[in-house]
Length: 124
Image 1 (cartoon, one colour):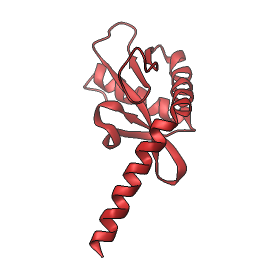
Image 2 (cartoon, helix red, strand yellow):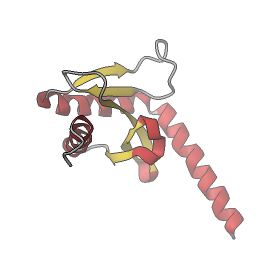
Image 3 (cartoon, one colour):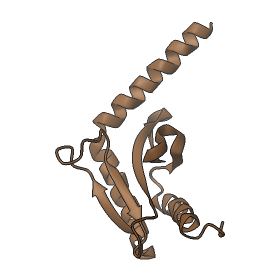
């Protein structure tokens, strides 16, 4: 019975990877929504969307403070179970889950809290 479960888990992971690669336009749209939501708070962005320029398999959005580029985070959008998409901290892949896509306001609040904590570690 465990072998069947292992096979199902591997198949789901492969399917999610394929959906992520094929859903590039969807990922870019969600990252743009997140950037638009964070812009009024004063965060700056660098968009790494072009495959030709950047050899990364998924679009990435680097978010950093206006005053410094030393503190920031790179966010990606990955396919999740149930046909949904999720914001993830790119450094940690699927383990860096932040929030479901579709609610850019909640995702912006989550990212804002994490970045503020990185800028000012005594706050949480």
